[in-house]
Image (cartoon, rainbow, N blue to C red; front, side, top):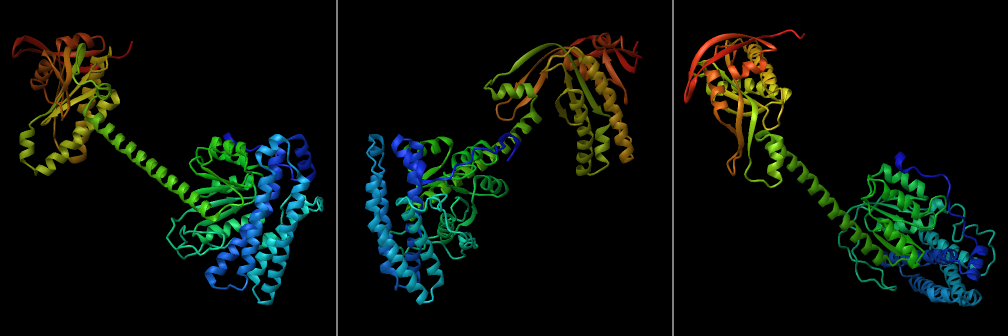
Length: 552
């Protein structure tokens, strides 16, 4: 886990022993009573679960010699569960009418029957050389004996934690690879019919977390029969380590575990941005409303009490995986949408200034602004018609693209706004649409860099291209034209005069108007070039922009 979600070393869940549970009955301690229900239901989960697995195996393989006994064991487990649920019903707990002595008496006969039937079936399995069946029957017998010891208040010292397996059981826990055959479908299942249909199930990786080895063994076998790739974890900390390393689609999480319980584990998972998207189904013998609400509020996808109905568990796993699949599709769609939006943003910014693009996205449809102070620059390749006639159109466009791309980089570095290209002419402006006081100075720097870029271009290609640069400063009107193919453009005498400065200029030189000269004369040397006629305007003097003066 990341440092933001580090796990404290304390807070382990204490072992469930009978004495505190009996005390809980007297004090109406709801947490203690929940643990009591959990303690009693855990071995019941194992009796019912293993008998169901054996009945399924008998139905699938056609081995029916033990099926009648298995059905009676399964029914006995159901009867025991009903007795415990009735004795520890919520209204009896609230009213203080839980009679543990009566419950113990009620459990004795059906529990003794389950033990006798299991022992008898175990002998038959050994006699018929059915070691796999015998192992599962041994687990049922162990679970029934644990429940008997707990209910009779005997052997409490030996059962340090209610429902814990005998030593060595961990070796029988299933860790086999998932089945390759198509997993069974839902089917219509009753306690006496465990032959499921074979509708295909979606592949998924599931992490099963339970501190009880027999519970994990049953759960892994159940899930692997359904075709899932299952990994097990015995503690909350182990689960957090594995879920961080693996790519899981679903987590089945027990609540009452030592060291780090299911509530804490769930909170850590949902607090980590890398893990919070994984659905978690709480699978526990706790069945009180408070636990259910707490899990759902903490972010659990669902809650299945033990002993679980295999069809219900399967349906809820399928529903949770389907929700995750839809969420994953939604996230992938949103990610793709973000990529496409970013592409659109880049395309829009290639066409329009950022400030104008933001206004356009905000809903403005007519964008026209006046700027009092700006400097417009035109750059034009000298004799381009003659140049283009000497080579192929493809080569001409390739070279023109290269040189204009270098002008684009200059504009971007100096934060000027490229307006457009017209044939072999390039137009940019400073002070529009973002106002700046040094608009003339930064345009002057761009003019010299453009000339140097053409010289570098000539050296790379052994060419003799030259360029004229013209500049003028003053007010302009700027705005968007077009409704489908947008263009940001400038209008006004300032633009026309800047164009004339370029067209009447000298190759390899920057020519400026008198207005621009006045803005730059404290920083640059100038060479007068005489007076030129300007269409629709009075004749005006022009100047070549020379070297920059040393800083005083």
